[in-house]
Amino acid sequence: MWSSSASIRSSGRGLFALALLAVVALTAPLAGCGWQPLYGHTDTTGPSGSAAQQMAQTHINPIADRVGQQLYNTLRDRMNPQGVPQNPTYDLIVTLRQSGAQSLINPNQTAARIDLTLYADYNLYRRDAPGVSIFHGESRNTTSYDLLNDPYASVVSADDAKRRGAQSLADDIANRLATFLSQPQVAAPQPAPPSP
Image 1 (cartoon, rainbow, N blue to C red):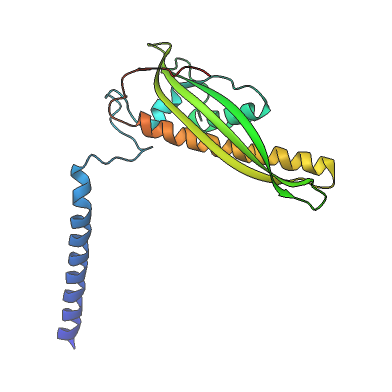
Image 2 (image 1 turned 90 degrees about the horizontal axis):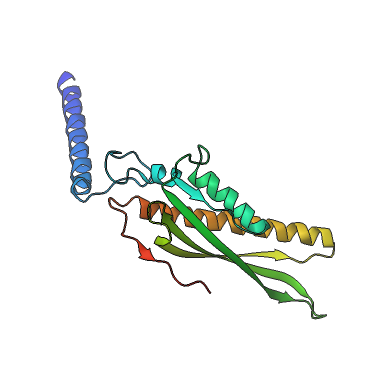
């Protein structure tokens, strides 16, 4: 009886050792490829530091219109959770536009549903090189809302669609900026595209 329990313990240790060896073998390639977590802590003595630290040093210019205010507030929550930076390194300028399209038509030829598309065009500038964009991006989001019999309910529905669209745009912009700013060396400045 003692020998069988000893062999069970011995085989249990063998399985554990085999599992540990498999984990080490699977994670070893990641050690040499330069992989690092996007929002994790890195060596802050380098030129960039972590994406979260870089994003916290970004001043977001106010964005026009009510939807622009919602986008601005959500971006600020995503990028500056500790508050507006005192000495920002970057400026983010976002231009927002929107369009609506009727997607469902009632038998009396009135719209029953609207597809609202928000477009954000944004540029990131370094404060030490004003007027020269180091990162340019475009984001788009489409949300829908119903046109209801009650005009107030339709307004509330439209406002909710705009709010959801602004939040989705803010997530996309923040993720793209985090990816860019997490690079070990931020790209050299490039001329800003001409404005339309």
